[in-house]
Image (cartoon, rainbow, N blue to C red; front, top):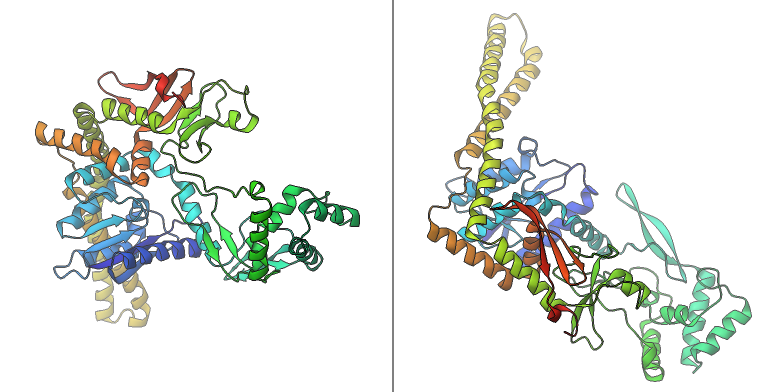
Length: 513
């Protein structure tokens, strides 16, 4: 399939080159994985979401509307990159769909079905959806920076120092060995290979007066971190603690190695053989559906997803309890599967109903109609402005024909007026297109019922990314206090217009129940 790629970075957002580069890299990889043929890439750098200010976007849409269109699909990183306006996004996708061109977000891949399109419209009508994943945008840019060998952590590992290197018009951090500390690192690894225990190595370092990483004495934790840090082989690893379903970024030879890989691997083998209980590799945090939404009603801290010992069970635990231990908070451990299931069931019971679906569609249509009024007002003044430009051009042509003014004097002004004329004509076409089809219709009860069932199935069958986006579109907060859960919705729910609901937590939801 032939596809086009569209990338955009707003002027008020993050580093333009890096963000554009990161978007393009992800989009190209997605196209390659799915065996799509990329025929064109469209880029609007440092632009806002306003339609008139995006020349690449306008060119892409115009090409997609040709009878002999050059591509069948447009790939974007997120729908927010396609159009900042929720209304414009819905309408442009509808317009392109009429010409058999799909718009696909590689991070929000809803199916191109009536249900999928309705879900897009509902999600795009909620402000929360746009701000919920700002961290994801930042993470993508940081992953791109890390993949180029830049060191993103705040503190350099012992044995290295951070230095600034030029990267275009900016400076970015890399690592280089700190000679004196690097010798200490080598001596620590050699000590292990010579059969010395960690306590013996610590005593030798403290006795010699060599300061530790923070100017303090040496301890077992510090030595263990050094002995298990691949950075000393010149390898950059970033993203090990990510809660997203992303593999860590690994870059070999990112900087000068202090140790060779063979020495490092030998030490790891000795550590495993001598003291397996001491090795507690940092686990990659699991992903939890309610992370960022669930909070403790007693202390206000977030409920954090954790694995039980052995990794067979998962639970949510209050952040205070996790940090300070038993007795620091009253909130009990919550079984992950049952707790998330309770919230999903409430969404199905109180949000994904025929009545609510009709109300959501009404809200989408109402918002689109309000914006349509602004579009009609803008469209109404364009013909007069175009007519004024035509009159001025006629006068300039008359002056040229009569010899009152020379061509070299008139050419710049004629060019300016023609350019403005083209802009107005393009904007007129855009506004007429936006006003041509702006409503989501639910024709019959049968249609509504089918949509409701499809959306309910989405909560159980779609990817975690889709389910998290869906849940965050309707749930603002899940607060647990004792045996009660307080659900706060992002919008009032009919028929009573409630925005909160209290639900009893069954004893079986508590971990071990």
